[in-house]
Image (cartoon, rainbow, N blue to C red; front, side, top):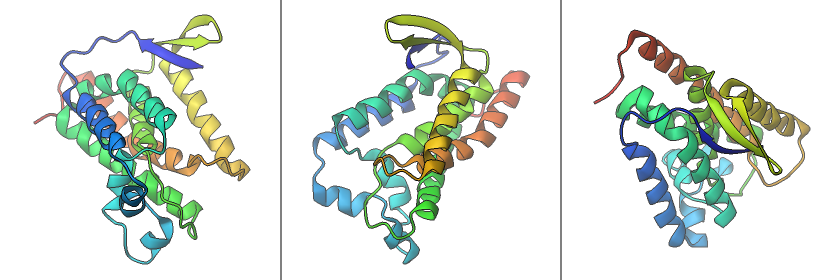
Length: 207
């Protein structure tokens, strides 16, 4: 299942969504192994009382071209409407909270790992959670092989997080930080609830 677009137009220019996409792309172009080691999130260092700031910086680093394309593409599809609903301050709070919880869940699952965690997947998982709660009936145009289907957002995203959970429980080493996805998703739930309440009242959390 590959999302193509949704059916909810943006009310405003999703400035922060585009800022994350552009900043992450520029950083990726200049990444070195030294940068990844210094600013990626390493569980062992975290449990030694280090890497607190890295619980955020890792989200702007990516391992390869496919990695950054997948993350930024999902952010492009789902980020604008969440930014609309939560406003700028709410969107920033959601992104940072989900990134931090993603790193924390990863550290719990792999406490002895020396391998740097990189990627915006935890933060974007939080955005998916918020989107699912705020816009459950939105239609996600989804490609399955060469067919395109309109899938309700709650179904598409619920299936997505279920797959992450199954892989996380399997314990199979795939190189993907499944628990970071789950942690980020958990972080996005309260923001989705807040966004849905604001949407119902016709107000927005913004600065």
